[in-house]
Image (cartoon, rainbow, N blue to C red):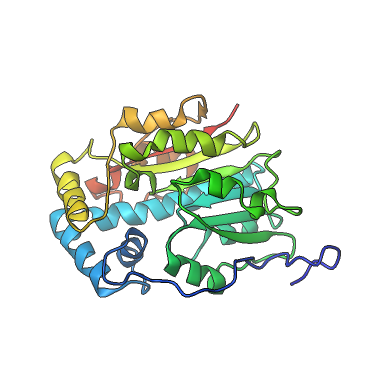
Length: 290
């Protein structure tokens, strides 16, 4: 669908020209492993093999993975109902219905979403699947790495003549189940600060992060499996996760495990897998930029 006034497509993803890419199917990739754990089909034997090894070491992995997906839905619904209509989703992963734009535009038809990921197979699916659902809204995709915030913030989706997001108005910055793949030597706290810096007052940080606080032996066994396959992962404790929100206003109940967080935001929506202790092997937060 084309906006007759501007000539821009109002709902379709705008992407760079297609070019040959190496899908790196000979080594596991966290987004494809995540897709497998969610029951998806966009993964390769090496992804499934390592994911099964991780499940053997840490049987709760699938539970916490699916909880993260449910958290994304609840957070987007909550913020859209608060009037937020701009979402910057970094570490998008393989598209899995419902996607952020489907949720947000179902509540705010004018919602604008920019997805960001650095995996070439995610890019391929973005072209086919991440299309907008409303005439008023817009969906875009940036191929970039979380570790390169300048590349994200300088992209034409955010700085062009007709940017997808207006950074002078509130934006929800979503970092769902991604920061634990950024070890300390990549300065994850500085990355988050840089991404938040240009966002307007009233913007939000939405974050979920793996932790070994509740089940240290099992979670660390699973993390060791990831690392052994070359996937860097670093679960963090509550204080370390809370540091990502320094300078922001945490919405109650603050940095919390899912069983503590869910009642404050989810309404009548039940916490999935609530009877599995592994559901609490993550911390969740929503924080507002003053």
